[in-house]
Length: 540
Image 1: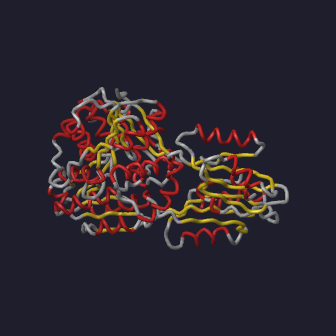
Image 2: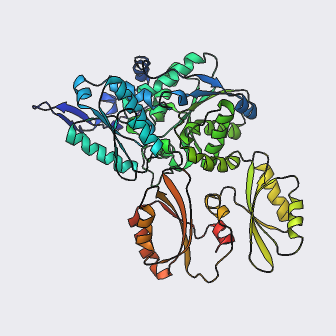
Image 3: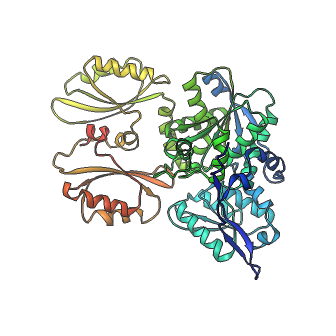
């Protein structure tokens, strides 16, 4: 149960003498006094009158995933909502609770995608003026989808935080009502209707439900309902490995802010779990599972094969967690349900998703191998690979004694065959490095293998995420190129809000501190990859 020292501290509003709405933050009050306990969400969820806009989505059996996992796997198809995401449930439920005066003045939200579309549709349905503040990096498909709902779109900043700060300034200036994406009881209750539908659609035994987590609104609403009505059902929250704010909060027993957040699954890219959602989740979820980019890509393929629909990364996150749970525990013949939470993804992202899927299914091994630079060496090497199909082979002459190759190989799912393959090559005196889990190797090196530059001195290597907008690259070059020589550069567009860039620079040791200060001033996420074995093996 909640400690009495735990608090809930959210903004409230009142009308001043002139009739204007004023927002303020009240003194912190103990949860014992005012908090909504998890079980009380049951009535809020049952009272949610959202079905004149939101739809009851089907719970579909997934035969192919079920066969592969030896369990009965079901998908809750929230990608079939009018805005292709569950977010319309919470946004609409929140709008229904507003006063007539609040509706007349209008509402506002900051969002890079699904919440924006859900709120825009809900506001259009009720005839409420809606303003959505979105980062400039938001894909055009999402911006246009919001505009089609007659919402006013304002593009501000490169990140959600910048957009959110601007939205909150407009709340004060124009007295608009802010509609939170997740950290609000009415929003949470709206999302909780997903659980109500599942338990009605599948009255038989259910062993576990897997729910994606960003800010936690969907998971909090569902977990509160499930644990009150069917407490025997396990509830697992699933987060991206590089945006696991709930897992961090669970471990610290308090909310913490992640220093960096991965943006591949943009729908759940949240640095800090919500206050109200964490209060509910810490007492209602059984565990938190994390999934990496490759595992999400594999789950997108799984959903496509079973439904012929394309989930966004956040939409496939729960299934990725389900598969990981099965793999780690070995459970069989259980009834497992995953939430397919959305399908708002850019078409040009599919190239990147497809590229990473085989690794995510553990059907491809990526190896760096040193072979003799001699006639017949390739034939000998390929003979050792047996029946493994080669998916990629990159090579450039290095010296007269050895050749270093980057090779992709098809394997059966799981790590066992990969480890066996490495052991076989090592037994024949090949130097082998398994790079299947090396992010830099998969993002950049596999497209760059081409030799070394021995004349380049003092080279250091950094990996960056650049916002995909005009001027971002120029800003980088203006800041760095005039001071340090750029010795290597690789960029690929992955169809997302951010591009991935690998940069080599010649920086004397004496200027290392100055470089770090400059990189921090840029404000782009970055990683020092100078010691990465993929760089050392092929390009250093």
